[in-house]
Image 1 (tube, helix red, strand yellow):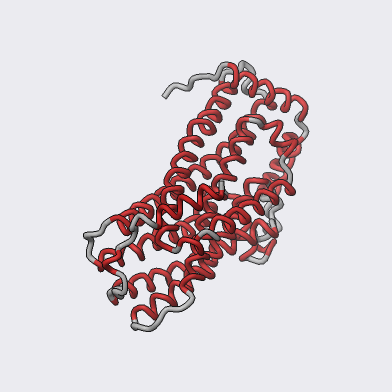
Image 2 (cartoon, rainbow, N blue to C red):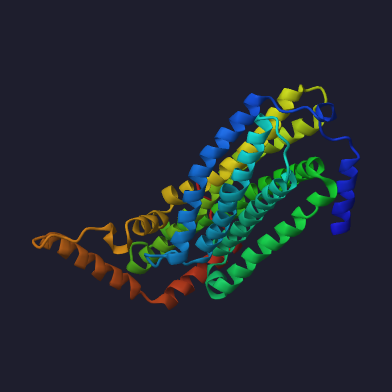
Length: 367
């Protein structure tokens, strides 16, 4: 496999890719300054946002974020944090020196870290796809076999494969590697998106339809089952939104890479704009991701608030005469205890039956 990929990369390098007529032509000052200013803005927003996501999962102040999905989200946040804390500052330095006509050193380091993070983001989305597929289509197997150790192994494999793939950058150079990366990214992300929608989201809709068709759908057990499925569906919808944002950032960037490498009649100024803005489109994805978690997943928002406000100080203590509020809190605790006392064996048996029925004869959901 590695030999075939290496041979393909060597063939790409012999295709005459890249705007060779712009070799040695410096970027216009306005291009460098624009990219530098955008990188400064991205650093200010990317680093705190992703750092808070990682801290929320690490400390978990509300004790409700330790699950495989959020751990994989934290791994993706680590990738985005590296982009904001390392790739963006290196970009600021590079474009500042470029705008001043100074020599640029260590460009290979910033480019290799950039491609490492891009590859890790793509593989992290692939890991999230597997997680959502198993959680929705095989809930019993997912609960019995998914552990922190296996999630940690998956996260480690993401970084190992990303490092191995990025090492090819040193063999073929920036131009050929960027072109190959664009092809792989376009194919993989589009495949993941359609697979996720067809196999995962539609399966989840079928599960909800089966619950609604049950005669005793208003029983306490079925209400609990429906709530459990709704939680998984909300996580799945958040994942699909993340994937859509990823596509909206990476596909324009890949198109710019194609133009940058195949347009031999484009002006050098346009080539430099394409070179910088393909970078901008990819790095803006690292800025958007943490805000998606916060707005789509209330648990993340609550955990971040508790961290920022110093733990238990997030909610003020009730006044001495607040008997109605206290009674409401007692009622909520009693309802939560009642839900927890539902027979787990019945729930698992029902889930097994739903999985069997869905695989044999899926229910069609009217549009």
